Length: 383
Image 1 (cartoon, helix red, strand yellow):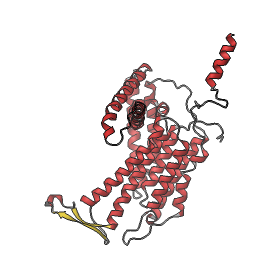
Image 2: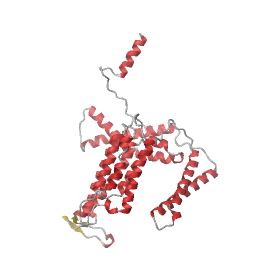
Image 3: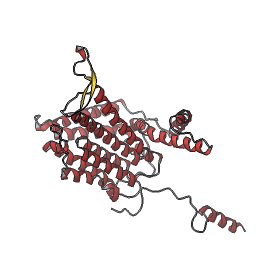
Image 4: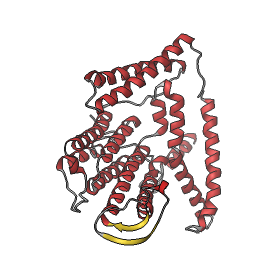
């Protein structure tokens, strides 16, 4: 695998890595492991994100995760189930009717319950950070180009939805830059009213331009297929999805027959693949310079899969290694195998090619830019 020349890693590989890290984070309720997972995700984003607008939206997901943690703590203090022995603060308790049994408004807040609520919020925040990392690293337009033809319409809607936050962040930065150039340095809540309307106007204008560009390139145009082909496609796709669901249930439930597990799951995946291939025939399209899938892509998606498999295996065999002891309250453990699995997820930060950088606009040595040199050569040729 050569990493000398900069190139963009396939977006599907980044999404596979991010989903693996999200699965690994969902199994842990340990602040040390959650902090390590967040550090790994942030390291990979800082090392391999490009200069596109969506690459700068990772911090928005971090702020969203922080807001989730705060909301989870507030809900626990106000209406959460109080548990523990170490009292922190006493709030007046409100008596609710019998139909609201199980909901406690106010009451004594204990340290153990507050820590449990905080860890639950942190786990969800790390999962959201993993999804934000995928949005920051993967180009959504290139991802849409790589989807099968049968998923093109669904993929278009998904790409538009996941690119809302990056485009909104870019619009906010562009409007703030324009206001600063005009001498308006208002900050804080007073600037929201002045920024909101231009941002919405810019977002609407960009949406209309995107719709016009997609329409001019033939998005949404299909080919009429025979009724028998459409019926066969629907039966294969629906049957494959049902078989996949039964296979997943059989894999997770050890009491089911062996035939209902992995064989049914593999059969469902094959049927779904054939159905997607047949369904993609009604949408003829060409791809200019398709994205390659090489060793870097296999390494990226493999690192995410290793992290997920290691932590899922630990959660099945020794689940207490991924939990923080609350009753009685103690220090969280640090399982070395889980740490190694999460550190494997950080390998794409150093073993994958660097993303291509935009050309520098600064003048070279001597104060003469490339455009000036080209202009001088053109003038000399005319003379």
